[in-house]
Length: 252
Image (cartoon, rainbow, N blue to C red; front, side, top):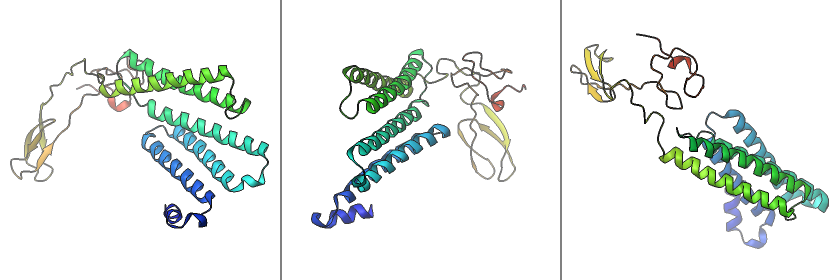
């Protein structure tokens, strides 16, 4: 930021074009890195691979800005191709970080999600193949058509999966729980040790010291929405996904 501000304040004739190119490149990667960190979630392996691929491409691009005079055009072309392929891989993994957490309990959402992931991987593969074999702007007509098809499918199915995850039915919406939305809960006030009769999922107060109390009660469900009431198995009978030990039924 400091270098960018100084380069904008100093007259143009005193600023090397490589400085502005470096500042622009680093700024773009910084924004992309912020987005990747924000969507990484629990997918640590994918996040590390994505960050590694993006960093490799960034260092190569910045290095070529300053050292391009040391290489002939053939070596520059090869190095820039490697940077572009690394960038393709990083963007594809970032797309995976974005799409994988999306979920909705409808079949079309699962189809859209898998279509987005598969199309993005095929787009990365065909793009890398065309770049390494043909070069920049010299792709074969078939390669170009396949790349456009995969790009359209990836974009459309990604938007569909996101829309269904945001606005579609949520897991368990079609299956009412066995507990009411609010049930009486007997407890001891943590401040004055007085007996308290509270209501779950609502704010209550201790009648003695007036401490505000809220108890959240949520019935365990699988990610597909299946209610885990009295389920002693470690596998969901609806989707076959493993059930965490803390969500299994323990009896009365």
